[in-house]
Amino acid sequence: MKKLFKKSSILLLILMLVFTFVGCQNKEVKGKFNPGTYEGTAEGLGGTITAKVTVTKDEITKIEIDAPKETESIGAGAKEQVIDRVLSSQSLAIDAVSGATVSSNAMIAAITAALEKSGADMNVLKTPADKPKEEAQKDLDVDVVVVGAGGAGMSAAIEVANAGKSVVIIEKMPIVGGNTNRATGGINAAETPYQEAAGIKDTKQTFYDDTMKGGKDLNDPELLRTLVDNAPGAIEWLNNMGAGIERVTLSGGATNPRIHSPKDASPVGPVIVKVLSNKLKEQNVNIMLETKAEKIIEKDGIVTGIQATDKNGNSFTINAKAVILATGGFGANSEMVEQYRPDLKGFSTTNHQGATGDGIVMAQTVGADLTDIGEIQIHPTTDPGTGYLFTEGLRGDGAILVNFEGKRFTDELLTRDKVSAKILEQTNGQAYLIANEEMRIENASLAGYIEKGYATKGETIAELARSLTIDEATLENTMKVYTELAKAGVDKEFGRKHMTKTLEAGPYYAIKVTPGIHHTMGGVKIDTKAHIISTEGTPIKGLYAAGEITGGVHGGNRIGGNAVADIVIFGRISGQTAVEELK
Image (tube, one colour):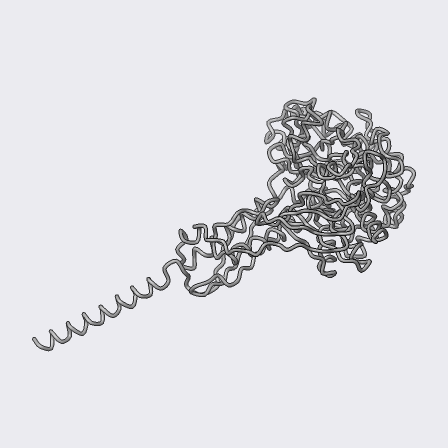
């Protein structure tokens, strides 16, 4: 009996110790983690995103995110911001990254999935933490301040840094790139070695004439000549930094193939953002993200800097001998669009959400003149639901347009304004881009659209028609006729001059499209040296501009491929001029 009692007492003691230990352990790890590295996944804009999260028992110490199919320049910026926000706050209660909402939300979801495996109290992690008090940004003194970290602003800053002058870029968005991130087609140039290697005969004068015609003869002749003459050098400048822009194809409004893109036909914008960003890192140029320019500072008629606010809303001054505005257009500012073009009310936009015309308004406060401000372009092929842009290069490479009745209705290679107008005349103001497997293999952009779910596939035309609820016989006849015309090399229906694909073999792909606000051709008035011109007709001392904030280059309609040339050429010129005129 005593032995039984003794054994029972020992057993009870052991159980008490076990429960005490488990209780202590539970108390210790509550709201914390089981140390280790955990992996989680989520679906982003382009595909699966994977997050590896390393934790100690008290802290998230390391986060690695793999997002191979997100747009590189957008995904990289979002990745950096998400990782920093989670680590600094030790919380999942963070905001999505503006300009990369889908990608950043997916990254947060992948991190969340990883941490769920760590034994953490997810309610605690999702509760907003008290933000550590950050020191307000102090005033800065530099030679040049660039406002805007898109293609134009980064090109300008590189030239300033190359000259050995101090420069800082401020960018109101959390990522660099602006609308350049969304540039899909390529960069126009004539008389390039890449055209010569491909046996393409083209001239700068033909390039000039095409652009003037496409711009409805509203283009500033001197600005246009500057664009045309400097375009080949802009490509070489980019390629010397590793861009690899060597493929030449045709785009709407061009007499000859002259739009230059990466070898695999991938979107040109992310490639440019990557090489420019890498160069700026190499030069140790400071890019201040989530920092907004509020006011241009002037003294005795000379611009001397800007007033800005940091990401916490603290005001500070950047004293500078030159200010370069590269803030983009106003395509994402519906009120401003409607102010100048009431007929465009309700249109979606292809622009990133930061394209709100801030720089134009700021420049006006110091006397800047405007030009072509009501000239706003709608791009013919955007996604009806999201405004996502499908490159004009698809039509240049051979795709055709059909309406909901299964019929072609236009020469697909007319200028953007004309093709847009034709689409808007169709049922629901929408149409389908039709391409095939041959094009998918050759065009990385098309392959990406298909992978992201924008395209409907059919092994045959009949199958595609059924999926689209289009009359089979009508669509089959449309495609049969087009194949015959393409083989003959003469488009008797609509006069298309370049039919590079016969589209006679499947599988086939259809992408639903509609026009969306794409580019604001008007803006502040500049000269060929990128000086901002005042309403009195003279340059505003110390103030320069480049890119979509400016007007005059594109006239009444922008030719696809000219905006990328514009941002690089005039971005470089603005930086060079600012350096030349520093006192």
